[in-house]
Each structure stands twice: as structure tokens, then as C-alpha cells.
Image (tube, rainbow, N blue to C red; front, side):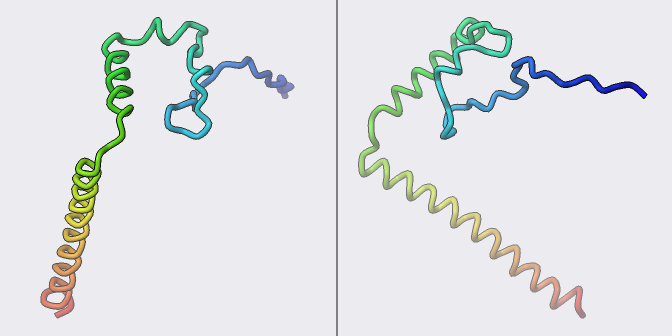
Length: 102
């Protein structure tokens, strides 16, 4: 039998978990990729402009009307999903009582 060689960590990152939005996100670690080249050299210029635009849009707090409209939209979407579930459940009960369990 072969002797197993001891595994040595070479420091490469297989899956980078330093992602924006996570509690452990560190922007200082995000400047280099796995090969040592700067991510800004590889980034698409349109991505940079989108990132700047999203940061500018997020800099102003929402007013009462915007917050109310957003909350209303989210609530209506959730109620729509709940209504679909209720209708499907009701149809299933009718199907079971009239056709399946005859």
C-alpha cells in the first residue's frame, strides 16, 4: 500500500465567502482575487457604474409615502400568495370529497 502524503494548505481560496451583505463582510479583503490580481482590473466598467448608482440611490432615506407604498405592495403580494394557497387547498378538499373519496 502507498503511504498517504500529508496535506498542506497552499492558501488558495476555492469559494470566497466574503460577500457584501453578510455580517462578516470585510471590504479590505475584497480587493484581491484568488490569483493575486486586483478585482478592479477585472471588473466590468458597467458594473462599476451600476454599483455607484445603487450606492447613490441608497444614500437617501425613504419618505413616509415611499415607505407606505412599499409596505402596501409587499402586503398585497403576500396576500395574493396566501389567497392562491387557500384556493388550491379548497379545490383539493372539493376534489377529495366529490371525486376521489366517492
